[in-house]
Image (tube, rainbow, N blue to C red; front, top):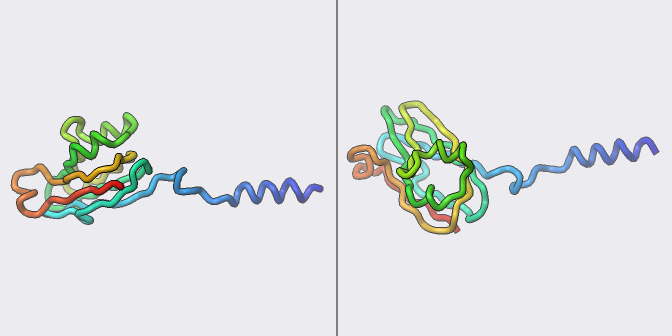
Length: 128
């Protein structure tokens, strides 16, 4: 009978963590005049952590005002997004994580720095 409690404990420890318990994670790289990937595809109502990395030679941002406004975030994550401006700003070599739950829709993304979007720093987020 001593083996049964040990077997039960081993089984409980071996149960894998499900996707519902851990948010999906994706990386968005900001570089000189590009986002990689330029288009993001997310699932409505499913938490996701977006890891933003600036590999450019200067500052860049990821501006998606409507997307961030429509997403659900806790207070800590909301402070990582510049409020009403709906952007994540990064200096050269910086990175930042934002965890949120997106709402269905298609949202435009751009870098708000002077001429950066004209030079190709644009994209979209599709949430279905």
